[in-house]
Image 1 (tube, one colour):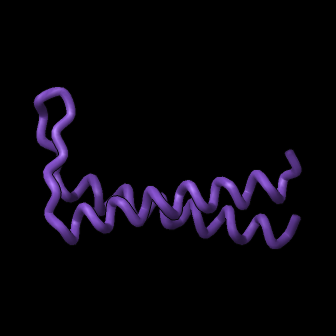
Image 2 (cartoon, rainbow, N blue to C red; image 1 turned 30 degrees about the vertical axis):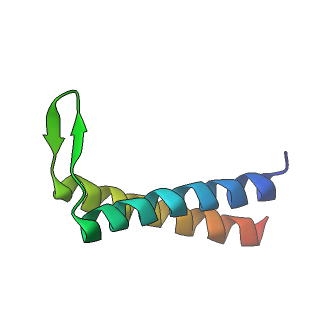
Length: 64
């Protein structure tokens, strides 16, 4: 696998993760893991981090 393909793949994966977190926030979906309710703040942080990683993957794919 070339580095360009790797960066494009990670861009898509992180973009999807970020979008799903934004949808969770917008729709108000509850997330429970092991009986513990996960706050929306976790999704806000996760959406920002995933968005940044998607952006970096996209930028790196353009330079490869």
